[in-house]
Length: 375
Image 1 (cartoon, one colour):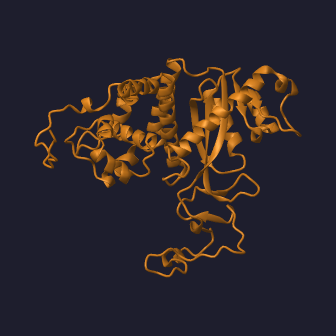
Image 2 (cartoon, one colour):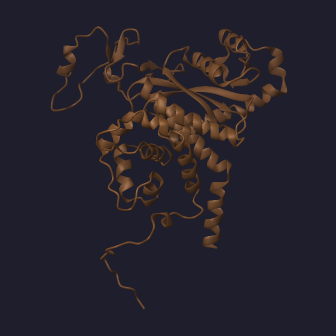
Image 3 (cartoon, helix red, strand yellow):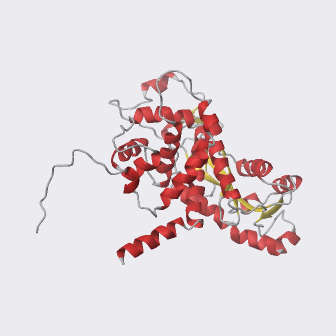
């Protein structure tokens, strides 16, 4: 018998939202891990909210929503709030019921800024790392470091002279009016970080690495990953300068590594001052040696441990690749180095969580369940 195409929906629904999520879906166990971590942060959350006034968006729900945004490549808060309205899996993960009203985008952003700082997200990131160490997924002695350029949320037109007449900013500097951007001609003008700055993001710097590559307004994010599974152990974000990668590597080594650990890196870190600084911390440098003028010890270069470190160093590149393609961190959506650093902490915490989903076999269990269902 042919069924009827009825357009009238049911007036009431008695299905539990939890029943809508597949039993073997990896996000079920991920939600359990995230809930355990968030339950240990209750004191940190309470210290940032007043005891009186209207209730805000619960910080636990805010962090779960931000994790979803990173893991599912949701490009904006507007799209995130929109999808929370109709995506049952997203509602379930955040902790919302089927009939709960979704927040307004501006309300979500205002509450998000309360948590978008180094303190809260650093605690969350450290607890994710602690969980990985507790499950014995991370190496205790062998690590790699690298830095990558993150494009700032600022355009070339905002990069103007520091000694300019500030009143010209309000006039649009020659724009055609009607809300259009100003017409700017850079031809023949010598621009540098010493004489120019961005009016949108003053902490962003005009920077490039390659000789024939384009210079853009950028920040640099640095990470230390362990060499067993490539989990990120530490994160730092700095203004883009020529010495930023070496200084950040030494700072993270002082903070994360212990005496006798090895630290691998690419040839850009092969400088005498940097290697001396690592040795002063009693950290063994396993840096890719330059063909000429290398500061690496030839005996170290010939060792088997050094060769293993060079092979494992690609894991740190995989973390950056995931962050820029899936995590949406190729270009930041925030202004200022501090907020970019907070976004980096959230992005690499999400990377560690998704990486652990694979290491624990949760994804494979879901694939096998789907295959058995379709067979």
